[in-house]
Length: 332
View 1 (tube, rainbow, N blue to C red):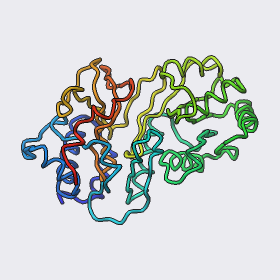
View 2 (cartoon, rainbow, N blue to C red; view 1 turned 90 degrees about the vertical axis):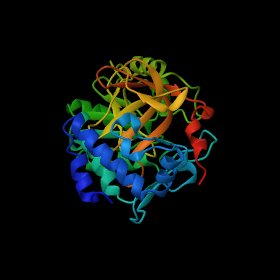
View 3 (cartoon, rainbow, N blue to C red; view 1 turned 180 degrees about the vertical axis):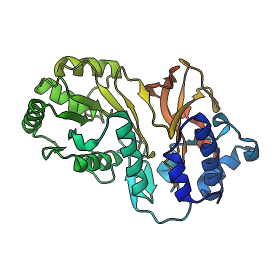
């Protein structure tokens, strides 16, 4: 072990610049390489000279598919909770073994405050059907925590009681309160098409996912419909994954930004072991999530995206499973 976990946590959430990020990222990489059996074997299978890794782009990124069949754990702390993906793609569910929920809470609370302010000041309403109906959703865990922190008693999960949702929002608007409506795409579309409420002044945030309920739409198509039906100028988005402990947010046009302890790096679609940081070039999305210190902080996702020159990024779609070829480098 290179350094103690408490020191990691304190430093991760106090990153000030790219130099800080690189220094801590390299230390986290070495810590996880030495203390995570699956990640260690994966890196070894690539034939990487660990001592020669000095930049983000040289760090091996573990394909997210490994979370479907392995317990991805760093260290020996007992597991406190298992978050599980919805598994609607037919290719199995990913499981994130979390041994410190306080770390997850610290991550999403700090991130929310960076992008939106104090959750206590918001009416926080959530439309997350299918997520609230199953156990182990990290999105529901985050939403529930934010809702419980709200000082407005009508904050909560609204399933089929859409009239109550609209009434709560209208009352909050009359009081000039801050309002957040967080919802999965198909639930927001249902609300838009069946009720078409005036949500002007409300932060409408979609978390993605038609989950087999509706015809798939591109993000611009979805946002165009929601903006017209809800009478809002922009639709916000949250980008997170079961396998992560951090989220990126978009306030407009589907351009996401990360908190200081999270970074997006693109990989070459033709060579998944080659990474680059060229604005407006398309590639596979690799994520560094330094909050994920007890699991794996370096994950190759199945998403396709592009970077902007201000560190923002877009999610353009998903790879076919065959494109994530790094997965067959190791069978444990």
